[in-house]
Length: 345
Image (cartoon, rainbow, N blue to C red; front, side, top):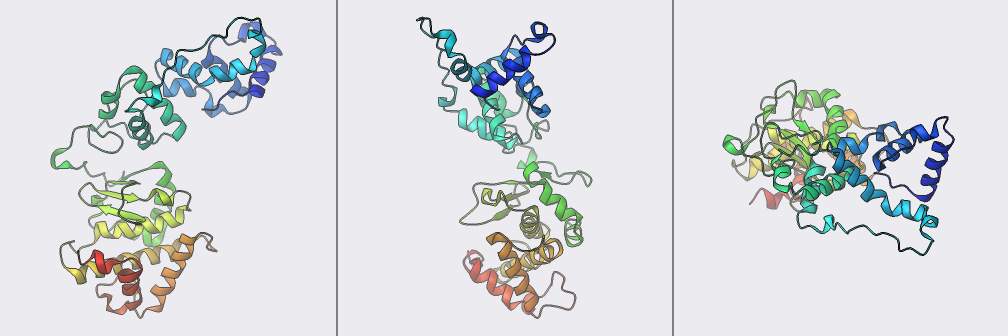
């Protein structure tokens, strides 16, 4: 939420004082003042933001005052120059609470932005609703995209009950996997592409339950497939990359989800499956490339396509059953990505 700086306070005051019915519309609460300013500034999406984050009006007003108290005092310091001590607010220290960071991170996982997540954490700590919030049954705040109403355990509701078997129910054919909003443009690019649409219709696609950010990937991995929870996890280091790059990386992991080769089938099959995943990734990138590569990762996608097309391959240039025609991609998997070690484990 935007804090009210000195110029902002003066602008709000001037706007209100010059209104035709100034006395009638002068805000009497912090929430009303915030809405008035956001409306005047043309940021209509911010009007009512406190009320949306904090359904309880008392909590919403307290959060607003907590955000803007110091700025208002600085703006109207002249009002306190009569020698009287300036009133000070009782320190809340909400963000020093041992559970504040965890609540904030869970709020972030529920598809709110970083600022709103912090405000939600303030509200949860203030109301003593940590466990209720983490279970996904706190009615005091909005949940964002994932409301935990199915009572399965995700990053968005870590204390929710487990479903039988420890997995969330698979998505329907119409819904598809749950996709973090920041990754939704990439998923849409993949779905609309010719190669991507074929990939995500392959048998076994219902295994992909969720596509989200994952901070606990091994080593320098850009993404990973967790079959036990149906998650394609994307490294937070990819935030800021174009949707086309993210779509190509998602395609690689999606292949692993629908691959007919089981994980435990040995070194050669492990390497072969990585080669197939890289073929898939290269084909998707060639299909959706946005043009001149700018970032190092975009340049890496271009090099991957070059290796793919330089290999003898097969006539159809599809995802091959026999990967012997892809020595370049085999070397890429074994040495550039160290699958010589991973597949031997």
